[in-house]
Length: 89
Length: 452
Image (cartoon, rainbow over all chains, first blue to last red; front, side, top):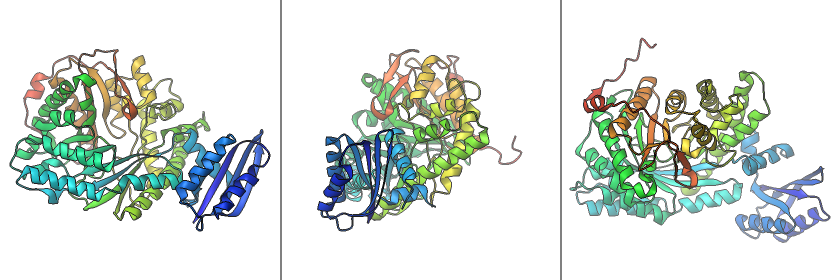
């Protein structure tokens, strides 16, 4: 199952490293990353494979969201299907 | 990979524009729960609902977590209770409502709909008993919603039932006077009621439906409003196109959630209801969409035309996005549940007459409207008759959910809290309709040709 992780917040050192570190511990594989900085705001979109993730999806979402809050970042993970449904016919 | 902008736009819609799935509603047939002993019937009802819907709330929450889209309500609709309870040797149907209430609480849903009767052409003993039980049933239960269908395009309007429902609405308000007449917020009087509506308070599981079914109601006034801000001043063709595209996206999400819920619960997918359902939250208002089209305030001249365009464009956009569309599908205009409508009603710009005109072009009808506590039962019956006539002639669903708030007068506000919001008490005509309502009988079904 593929999912999209989005990270939005004020730019700071080590965002990608920390998110990647965290998900790799959970055996989540990164398939693609794109990242931009708009007016000091960091925005990252990652396509990941969660089929071998070691914890339930809801827990992964909660952990990422909690660790994001510690650094004032909005991190969320959502199944890819919702974006496909909304933006692809 | 998906376009980054598309992904972020979805997240913005959820985060800042109040995009959500308004409800996943499981319809459950109770026709096999009939029994001559009312106690046995109530037990069968409780058992069937709790076993059918035991995973409904959990499944909704799982989908919410995985897709990152809020699913605001999980609900149950059941076969109109008048049909089920009619088989029992009792005249008191309040225990049936209590059984529904217990089952709803056990399964963890927000509301259960179907304490209902369909009396568009005539009333059975069961229908009369049910209507007589409504005020008490809605006062002693928390989650039960009730609806009565008093007219249809094919059958005309049952004016005996209209008279009875005016009195029932008043009795409901008096019985829940300590809560501002809250019982009335859970009671809808329909003309042309639909069998697969997932929205409350009017949901019930029609007799033409399957054993169990999953219906989903989407929402998204905030998303439509935001999209229209980007086309300020442009012609209406552009406005309609913009609404269609937005409605398409919103509905695709509803379809996805409906299919997912249906497969996880092992219950067939019924319909997606393409409704723009507002909430009292800022940025989730249908009235503000109409104002975005260029009206100073919702309720002024032009409002009906704006609403007609909105309602039609939402359907056109949504219908292609879902494999099966049904329910009420249109823009809702519940006054107390819409921040913009509340403001417009308070300022006096939005009146009962204008709302009535608006219901000719949108779903559903006079919804969540508070009127003074001294409004007579006959006046309420007459309001119901007017609204039913609009539905009957125009072959559409119309409804009345009106609260004659005990002890309140024009200018006061009735607070219901939560999604039901707060209702400014609106003036209605004081000229008597006593004799009109007292006639009873039936207004015949209309012609289907020579339409003008």
